[in-house]
Image 1 (tube, rainbow, N blue to C red):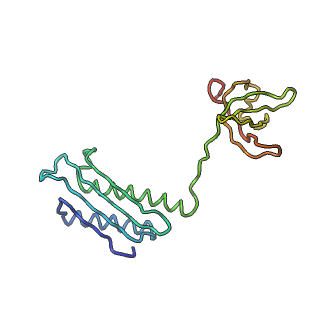
Image 2: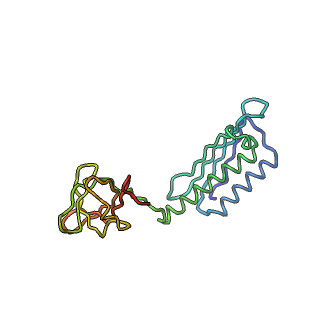
Length: 188
């Protein structure tokens, strides 16, 4: 880390064991990712003197270049096992580690982008040919060929069949590259 970690406590006086655990978790993150430039940790204890059954709140912010900050805000009053400060700290740093993993994949360009398939209904078939047209939800007409229909389901399609499809640009306009029947016509 380029700057020392900033650690603050409110309504709570940490033991040496707690301080050691925090240092251990920070060191673990640094070994996991050398790209972390700063760490800000705030541990807010319960507001009353009797901790039993009350929540610790942990705010953790990690800065990484070329990426938005990693932010973990955890209130641990909802789960009994998280009332213990050591568990709460470990859980917060675990969430941060998963976010760092996601950030690292983003920076390497390895994040998969799931393009949602379009939805439509078969509106007509071309007589004597193995093709037809799908009307999209926004009223456009998309050409499709038998070979684009998955699982050999072309012959099970009829006018009005609901389908999901992936659209691409064809020689004569938009066409469906994959067509998958849905609803009552879908064969699993």
